[in-house]
Image (cartoon, rainbow, N blue to C red; front, side, top):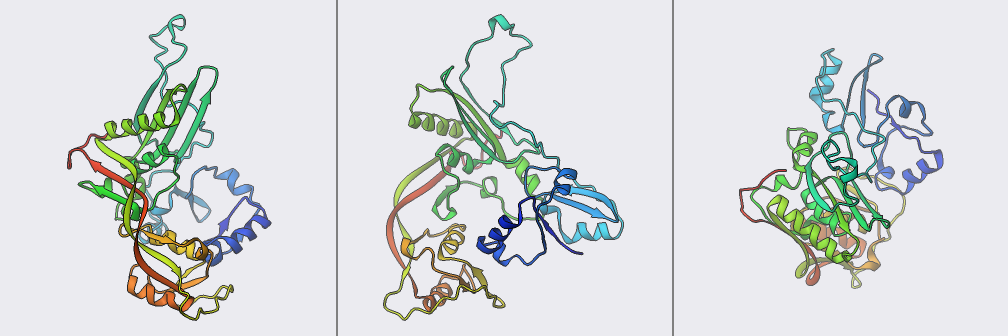
Length: 339
């Protein structure tokens, strides 16, 4: 079986990806650039997009989490796969409102010229996560449409953030799997359908930006039976910095791979990975962010990590710093309503 990476991007963009991207640098698969046929035959908008072709016949179109030993074995043995078909809506307009007024009972001459509202819906199949904010200067309406985000992600989008480190979250909840996907035998698509939501709001532009954010945050609190806040706190952190007392090893920019090692392009990439786990927040002095590449044994064993970083002239210490923390608390632990 041969896996081939196909992209509509040109050769130059592909070369940039392979030389500059943390993934592209270490991805050892054949690439095909300038594709037009595959995209035409199998249109899609969201990744991953897996087309199962065996003996010249399309057997399934799925997300990547359906690619496992059991399903591949079924295909190769001639069995029929009974998997949900991934059908992306390629022309969906995310700027349109999710809900409309009841035109069947409200006659045109009675239709209001403007309406303010907010609403939450459950997951919308075949649509990828998206954030849209539009301003109607004629009717003085601000439209916020957040499609298919997890509950924490909805709070982040309202705050104007794209992401937030797990290490800077405090959760007082009965079941964290309601808020974060945890790999398990069940497919992620099934988890998404149960734990991702859409939020749609039309607000008057007379409200300030902070008033809008406050109103939308209260909406999420009320709809989900929780309280979510981002606030500054003085927290004990792990600090990554240069070790000026030791002789720093010369870092080679050449791509090398050592067996059993994690290859990390820069300290900034390592910082991102370290903060993807719940625990003590990890901060880094700006001057060292671009240091690398690094080859490490483990990111979970802090003592081992500290020892390995010494050869790169990097040290680890603990100190308190004022940082943003996301606080999520269920109002009634063990009880919640699902829109």
